[in-house]
Amino acid sequence: MTEAAARPVARALDDAPPPPQTFAPERQGAINWDSLPRRIVTIYTPLICFVIVLLFPFYWMTITALKPNHELYNFRDHNPFWVTSPTLENINRLLFQTDYPTWLMTTMTVAVVATFISVFASVLAAYAIQRLRFKGSQWVGLSIYLAYLVPPSILFIPLATMVFQLGLFDSPMALILTYPTFLIPFCTWLLIGYFKSIPYELEECALIDGASRLQILWKITLPLAVPGLISAGIFAFTLSWNEFIYALAFIQSAENKTVPVAVLTQLVEGDVYHWGSLMAGALLGSIPVAIFYSFFVEYYVSSLTGAVKE
Amino acid sequence: MSCGRGRTIGWLARLFDNKTFLIFICMLPCLGLLLLFLTYPLGLGVWLAFTDTRIGRAGEFVGLFNYELLFTDRVFWMAVWWTVFYTVAATILKFGLGLWLALLLNHYVPCKSVLRAIILVPWIVPTVLSAIAFWWIYDPQFSIISYVLVDVLGWRDTYIDFLGQPWNARWSLIAANVWRGIPFVAICLLAGLQTISPSLYEAAMIDGASPWQRFWHITFPMLMPILAVVLTFSVIFTFTDFQLVYAITRGGPVNSTHLMATLAFQRAIPGGQLGEGAAIAVAMIPFLVAATFFSYFALARRKWQQGGDDD
Image (cartoon, rainbow over all chains, first blue to last red; front, side):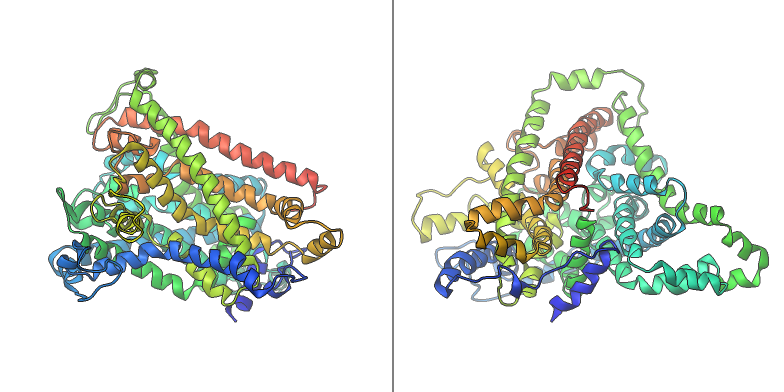
């Protein structure tokens, strides 16, 4: 069961001394008085409603992307909840008549490079804060945590002037350099928690055997922290794929835009909305993250909850 | 920076074993990037708010002129009011529904991990892209909600003008924000719920506590620390929200749904008034500081209740 696989990861993220117990769902609510009909009304029905509401926009997105125009704008003759003659025309138009592939490539490049820079910087910083333990290291840790609470909405105006002065305006480089500002605090925070869970004795043994600090980091700490690195990496990737305000403010030309910005600004031409292609654009832009997500669900859940508990 | 190279060159190895030097090297990329692109812009933003900088022209110091201008600006005050209202309404709904969902998931339900994975999807997908889906759902002519209400259920006679009327647009935006926020709240609170020991509930049941009493005297206080953290995050990111409003209404109809963030963007980038935009952005900071302090004290109070050992 995937549930069981996630638990050691979640526990590892917590403080080392008393690991807070997680209780198996079967044991929750020890005495189960509720009969099946009662459970259906109080648990299953609301749960199903939640799932339907949470997933409906995606269903609607998909079904709209596959509809030909005559079905899309005619609810009287065609049931809007279903598509009778599905077409790939919207997706075709998107891929071959717009710059969509370029946008995908730009977004991918920016997200991957920003993720690598952030994870690299965060590993070193988290190691220094958690393991090398210098004077004031807690304060540095706290200020990195506070840095995560500084939202992009109040930084984009001064950053825009900086980007302009550095001559990076309208270049993906501007995004690669600014994305780490919200990625590094999160990753560092996640990794500090992770490094905490690795027994210090292992490092002491290596020190006694004559290993240098860097050897210890490279050969002992990092291999043990691989799940933490994966968590930090996937979060950083998703966050940079989803980023909007910097990409909107720093990029002007159509071919350098990232997918979220381009779908909103390039696919809307004047007052005519091509809802079919817009939905296809939204759908294709979500798919890479969704695939990525489906592979690493348990890492997402455990690092999300672990980071909040920290 | 591999260790092999360090061993072959003796002085380099010694240098990297020097703790001070190593700490410096390790903190350099992180602190360098953060100081340059986070701390410096934060200060620069405060400075810009005191100047009349425009795009393509360096500004001069004008003192509090931008703030005086904003003080008499009806659009700005409406944005402040709407931002606060949006944050409060969305947060209450998000936490109410999110807590309910977490409590539902905390029961024994089949395929729980699959359900949990599905529920997180709205939070993972790029906000702007799901906002576009909402834009289409709120379309005046082809809205699926109107179709269901008018043509299927027959509850109304006319299609709803979701984004054309100020209050309709406001509630539509809040609904979209709540939809996006529920998964995060629910999954985090679920993690908190799972750390509560069942023996507490057993003891309460033996003492004859009603389900509501069990929730109010056990679940809620035990959930408080995690609730405070999630609440801070949620409030800060709802207050500074930009994407949803920009994608769905762009502040319209007639500026009635401008959040402070979208108004700052509107004035600064397309409008070119960087100084004024920066002043609006700086005006958000006191609210954020207040939210952070609120959660800090909520946490501190919790520690005192527990005799200081719930770290």
